[in-house]
Image (cartoon, rainbow, N blue to C red; front, side):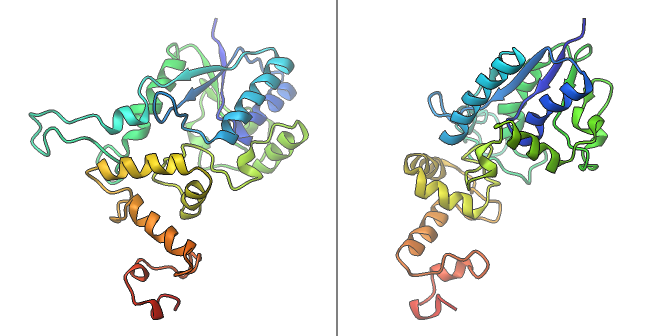
Amino acid sequence: MPEHILSLSYGKDSMACFGACEILGWPIDRVVTAEVWATDTIHADLPPMVEFKAYADRIIKERWGIEVEHIRCRNTYQDVFYRRKSTMAKKNPGQIRGWPMRGGPGGAWCQGDVKLPALREINKRRDRNVMYLGIAADEPDRTHILSDKKKSPLVEAGWTEADCRRWCEENDLLSPIYTTATRGGCWFCHNQSVGQLRLLRRDYPELWALLLKWDADSPVTFHTNGHTVHDFDRRFQMEDDGLIYQDDKIFRWSMLNEDLNYRWF
């Protein structure tokens, strides 16, 4: 018999799939989530999100009688970060991979080498199973991936993103990423905003220190435009010291090297 599996990210849309399935009468046999780790002992989620997931797991167990399956990724981010190229490689033999680069032919390695193997493990029998995905009814640019084996209860129920948020609020299952400045996803992501990096440095100095260590070891820069984590660290320190404004709209990197009299303008 095929299993009906809800893929849970703990965001508002995947969480609201529980409510949509109740309305539609769709069965949920399993609830699974891919769990990424920065290192063997440090989670990829920030502490508020780790706490919310544990809380949500308890509610799901109590209300729907399902134990959420956390499929831990086989490789940590750090494992792959320090993975070395073959000594026989034509380009940079023996060099570690370092930060994921978005511009390469294979894209960033963080998805393909860390998270996707766990997702494939979740659905080994994907030819028979039915996956429920948290795609809202007002996300037409994402619905093309849906099929008989990949369904969205939200699309079927006509639930928009606003409907999903409302359901999560009413059921006390809204992730803290929607009510605080805490980032969803991996705290070390190279795609996160400057504001999120600033908060990471301020609120989690131990994680920021690890980010700086990785940055020092990486043969490629944190951003494809050439800027490093150390560049951001210098920028944030100058903001703390009152030497430049904390204003992302007027900031330019040349301010870090300009004479003090010109940095403000």
